[in-house]
Length: 381
Image (cartoon, rainbow, N blue to C red):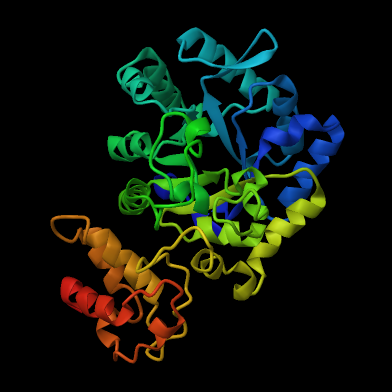
């Protein structure tokens, strides 16, 4: 298993994580065993947005004796009322539910205290300066929460959160289908008017979010990486063609700022299939060819950092150079941090000899040599 530093938190999280919402579907001990098995495979981050007692008890039991080896995303505002989940900003309800989370997980702290499920602008606005947010900040001061995050499906809200200075990481929905679509406050409407026409490349707000998170060092953990399995079947895929789980994982993990993809698991075999990402050959992870050949979409001229351009005779990491270029040109001047990271590359864009071999391999027709020239001019090397 490979690990990435989760933004400002400094926590090392496994590239493949565990999304816990399916745990309650199974007999308790079976789910406990499944979590423990995932941990044995190197998975060390689990998301618990669920408020139901069974799911929380399962995670608590699975972490017994190894709590410090797990990184827990616990959601503030996910409550259990009358036998069902209710999202609440009421301070008493939120605190009671969070204390229940700590008790059932048999722990005195949560690694990532999540501002739970903010998709509406009005909800984000209400949270600012509220008793709800004040309490979360106090929990961080006390050490009950180690770091503050947010969960959202809306890139506009996510952009504001990344700029806020309060949020150190976020749980965001990332997959090839979602990235084609503009922001919405209602996730259920994301594909209501979908016709398969007129969508080319990543939506600008989503692309801006990934760049901003990379720039601001706000780590992203991923939910809905498989689009609920719809991407695995050409009949239900918005692209008109099917992806594999490995391709979806690779897509998410090549977005700037992304550190871990949280998968829902029912069986040990599914865990094995996801963890195999770390050893799978590049051709099995190749999502770019699928997108480029999809009948309903095109990313023409847009670098997706897929790595098809490799190898370079001058050993330029073209995808990384393009990533830094995209980060830099969004600012009035090149940020010092981006300049420093670019200069730290073993080989910079100025080494490009213009052979254009990379361009012949790019599925999206990116003018790589031209971009290398612009990058060398921008960064001065």
